[in-house]
Length: 150
Image: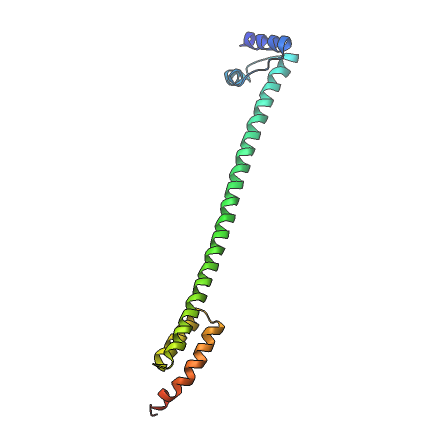
């Protein structure tokens, strides 16, 4: 083991070749048993330190990427929910307007049915057209109500 480290250090001094990941994997179980001194010890510990920093950076990048993806999903979900809510409100407004128009048309034929349709329009979305339909149909409903005694 010590001979392997000495040869690797010799290559480092000659060519600047540092220990590879495979070399570090091979040395890791014996790291505490290597009794090295001086420059050789600094060479080996520096290689392990670089490897540990590289692994920490990789984990940090993975965590940041995962956090970013989670944040992106949360923002996307929030935007989708807001869009869905706006679409639902818009659909309720359109449906209320359609029912209010229908109530206005029914007023001359059947004031009671027209009033019920106007109430439904107001229940879907209490907008101006639904209020107008309620007031308009209520006026025509008065003769129908007057027929009932009591």
